Length: 206
Ligand code: GRF
Image: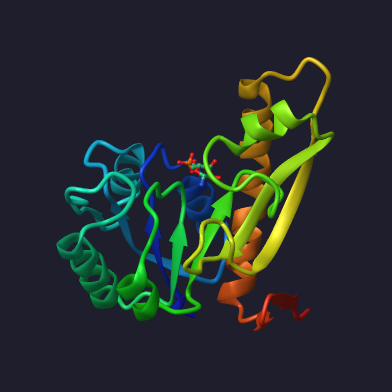
């Protein structure tokens, strides 16, 4: 049977979460296909990884702002993702905040992974925030994207221990490894239609 649930994956970095999702699709663990990979960074590893897999990969110049897309860029992102007929937009290390028109175009159909147990430590370098705070459990969160920063309804979380002697690097690596397990599981559940949402409450039907 042909997979018809279509993913649009957005990233700005190396793309290890993209790889985890692509590998899970290949292994038959996610009933979906990757329709397009889009980056705001021309040299991003995620585009290279996508092209290695013969997947459509597009760079779209983000425009003049540092932390968001400008109007033209936003329009182009929406156009490319609409033309690719994506059912779900998967943010995998996409470093810009998505705003009004983009969010409205794909309402309730955008997910992100964040390297902390939200609502603790939103924002940048959350593994370092966790280490500096002295928490004993860190982790990652997959959530729907809303107009806030790392504030949408939570789909799934995975914890990792913070060990004595951890550095920002060792803790970040442990969280990253957890992301590669959690994100494919969440995307699979979304693709299978096993996720229902009521306000902030996300339920896994099984
Ligand atoms: C991940 O740590 C994710 O939590 C954050 O950006 C990073 C992306 O890493 N949103 P990669 O490009 O998937 O390796």
